[in-house]
Structure formats: C-alpha cells, structure tokens
Image (cartoon, rainbow, N blue to C red):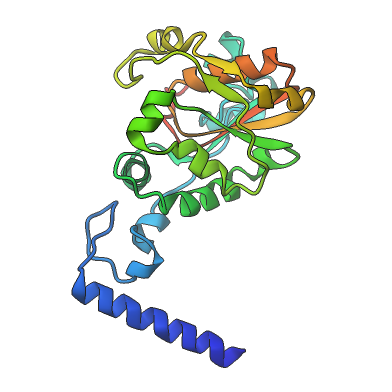
Length: 251
C-alpha cells in the first residue's frame, strides 16, 4: 500500500513536470507559471493568500464588526441589519471579495474553469461550518434560463454540489434582470424584487433549515429576495453561504 502511494506521487510529479514544459500553464489568479498543473489551475500560493473575514462578525450578515462590539451583545449585528428587517437568518463567506479570491471566482464564472468549484467549496465548508451545521439541504441561487444557456452552467449549483449536503433546486428565477454590477444598494434590491419564486421541489422543505449558495454577496439583495421566496413557501430557517462577500462600511 505504501509503495502504491509512492508510485502515485512519483507519477503525479512526472506529469506535473511534463505539463510544465509542454504546455507552460499559468495560474488563473496570479498569472505565474504553475509548478503543479495537475493540482488545478490556481497555484498553492494564491489559495493560501485567501484570508478569512476578521471577527467579530455580524451575527446575521457576516460583515466584520468593530472589536468594541464584543463587549456589547446587543450590538452583535451591524448597523444595516439592525436597521433593515430581513428574511435571512445567518450568512457567512469564505473571505472578502478581492485579490486572489476575486480572480478565482472570475475564472470559475466567466472563464469556465469549473474544476475550481470543488476547491472553492472546500474553503466554503471549512469557513462556513457553522452555517452548514444542522442544515437539511443547500439551495443554489438560480440563473434565469437564458443566462444559464448562454454561460452553459450555474456556478452556484457547481459550488453547492461539493458542500456535503443534499442539493435542492427549490427556486426558479422567473424574471430576467439587468446585471447588478454598478447598481447602488437600493436599486439592487428593487432590481431583483419578485424575480425568484419557489419551485415544486420546495414543497418538501416546509419547516426545513436551508442554506442558500452563491458565488458573491455584495449588498445581499439577491440573497434576500431568495430568502423571502423560501420563507413564503414555508421554509423555517434560511441561511446563506457564499464564496466571497463585499464587506460593508464599518460602524
């Protein structure tokens, strides 16, 4: 058995050396030549550079809070979550959107590097363990049918498949909306209002605890619209887990 392991490692090293010379593949995040192409399109240095959000975090949305809030349990939520009612019970993300994490998500979403979903989901399982614990299933945020046909896949569904929970496609996107990029927060919420409805699969989730899955959470407008549709269909608790979060302003 030990000899078999050594043989596999030797074969992988030989394959890496051959690919490095023949194809000279570059990291999808930093653009440097890959030392171990067989390990995936992103180098180990870039994966290690993806840092978690610094606690303390808002109990609800997962945004970083000022450390002084540790002394005040009543202030365990950020200003935005205390000010605005929400259907979402808790949210967490791997890290802040930017750097290598943003590059990895871009490579997955727009360059079709779908093999990155498994490695990114591994980070989501690790850093979102508290959100996944006790959940009955994960629900990927859906794309409108024409956008999914254009892209060829839904990155949220690819991530959801690797999170270790049953995947239920409990939502449908019934209205095509303009891209959220560049829109202010209020416009983003208006843009996706009524865009999601519960699917037939959601009938089995009455009283369930579900985790919404998406690649990036910016203002939370899309996640909130999805959570509202799930709660209206009888879901008991809606959490969210994303690969990245655009952290809001501090207190």
